Length: 461
Image 1 (tube, one colour):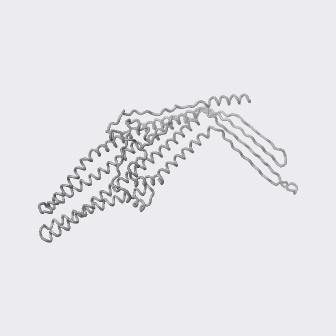
Image 2 (cartoon, one colour):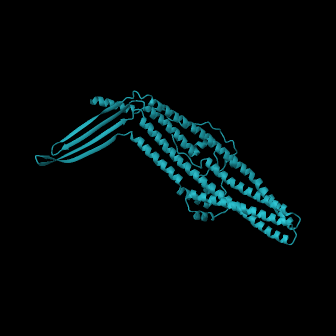
Image 3 (cartoon, one colour):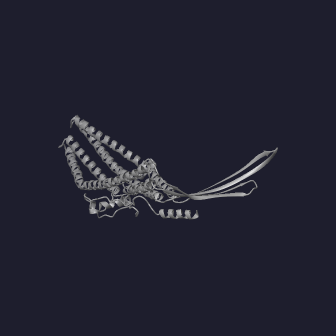
């Protein structure tokens, strides 16, 4: 008996070195050897990690710190990491024996011939069981669980990058919104002076009554636009309140500090090769880890089709009353052979292989999507940069045109209608320039996010 048990143990330990299923190899998607869109500044700038610090805007830095310190999204991502770690612990536990102990004690009275007899009984038991991992089922399960921990960590990094980009984008929108509102209000104030001058001229009989109506209508139109713009700014403030977790009065007070113009980012480099995105994008890394996990789960399903060997043993001690103590023990192997399950285990293998194929396809599609995202961000940034010079020239030209017509109107050589048209042209050009410059900064933020935000994956096999 002992020799048979030793033989079985030896066979089990030998077979436990076997691992079923494919050994994982990271996918290598085919990518272009270079970017097709023009790189900003010929890609010579240094890549940035805490990129918002390069804006040299303390308000933006404070908003980023507030958002990261109190973010339900990041907290949820951290909870997912802890959940994945617990799953890994559970998977690894199957590699080790299980020990369970139990004990009982009872005291009873029995009446015999009118006399009560009290009896006691005690018992204790220790049970041990261990299923040998003959074909790597438990090891593949732990491998899948470990890959998913890495995926959840990558998800946390991706959530952090997305949060930082969203805070910065809202902040840039707010600064641009305030500048636009200021432009409308400045025009509204200027038009009020025009109304006053027009009213005096109408009372003196120098102009037609319709000119005053035109001035008042133009002023009302600009005031309405200014009111709408201020409302848009208020909505952006509320968005920052939601992202940062701060109170609205505190956020508004913070926004009044420091520079009130658009923040100017330093140069942000984009790697020369599209393949670098695989190392720079945490969302891509998370999907690749899911591919690794599904690959390991194929081995779990294959191993479930094969025999399993477990060892079990127990020791028991029992005593009754003042009598002696009895001891019992048992041990031995148990072999389970799957004979017929109507195709259930084979279907599980097919399902695991299909899950791997789906995860691999999702990864390949994500690679294409992120390459497209970067290419689009590069095009948008380059287009805005090339438009900025023309937009600035147009704004300056329309401003000079309005100044000339304003002087001519005051001299009586130009109509109020022509003057108001020149004013609207100047205002439209100024708004277009502010909007374009706002979009330039937002394009930098979009490129930062598309390039992975400076995140670098840890070394993985």
